[in-house]
Image (cartoon, rainbow, N blue to C red; front, top):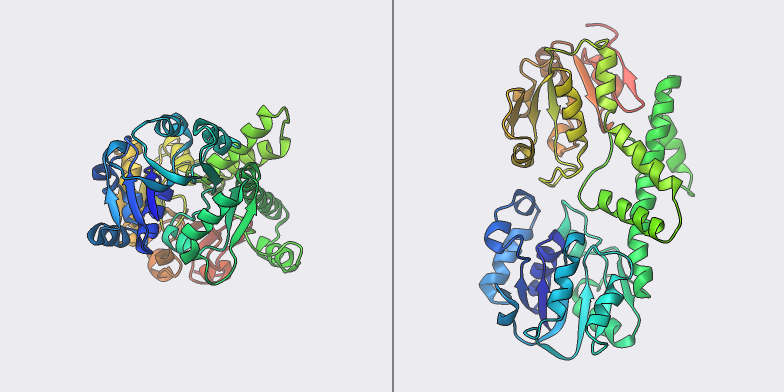
Length: 430
């Protein structure tokens, strides 16, 4: 098929490269806010596994063509929109341009993070001459290529048979192992995407509340988590306490869901609590540090491992580390931070500071001269550190594990004080 694709979001880049990879002829117009010359250099894109090589291969093969203006596009069978919420007006402008040339029976696929009902509105702009499909973005950042080309599900919002048929054919190459399409009306698909992320966020926040209670009662929350997850009505997915979630999509979808409820006249106390709990949990490691040093933090040096909101990405949007840094700096703490991908994004946000040193090669460099270590992002290289080396580097021999990836007893047996989220252990001897 001939596909005209518009957008510079991760979903746009992934769709452009994947559709071209399986033989579709894709003409890709990046959004004017991030033309390809800029987009190709951003850290979050270059750090996505497999993505850049497939883009380059598509460009070399000619199945993927970059264009600078809609007037350069050929006649298309499919118009694929992958835009951010702030770019809704640009989608409207595009669909009303006379230069946009569409084949008879062309289909609009809305893969954008727009409000519920937006696909119907865009369909109205096309004056009912073409079908439209809502295909909510369900990519997992850090494994975008894998989640697009080997999907576990696609929410396929369609209100007519022709649109569904074209969407299925377009994505047929990624649907051979099993039936991954979940057809439903367009509005239902858009709301389902928000409802899924709302449920996942609720599970995380609930587990974080239980971890806080476990701390107070002197209970290891890992026993509680194992017991809850073993109940088949609950399961283990998204049942891991931590120091808060972030990211451009997860947090944004929660706010969008709350906005949908508000505009429909329904106030959601639950969603408000979920978001409040998450913001509070971003301060958890700071509060544990404060308690350990009895509020005497001025002049301390703290090592932090991880700045990205999750492993596998260079993004720091709404990342817990941002709240943590503000709290530490307010107390006169110096920070030495290691992250294999996100230090550039961090400096772009906070600038160069005397109380911040960053490292992207050796994580132990961040621990030299530090009083304590905070684990914020669970990058795989952090999972099995040299504990005896850390015990020699950290003057207060304190490890604050914001993701509960370490075994408290093992860490304590190496002569370190361990504080996790609902977990703790002290050394029996030094």
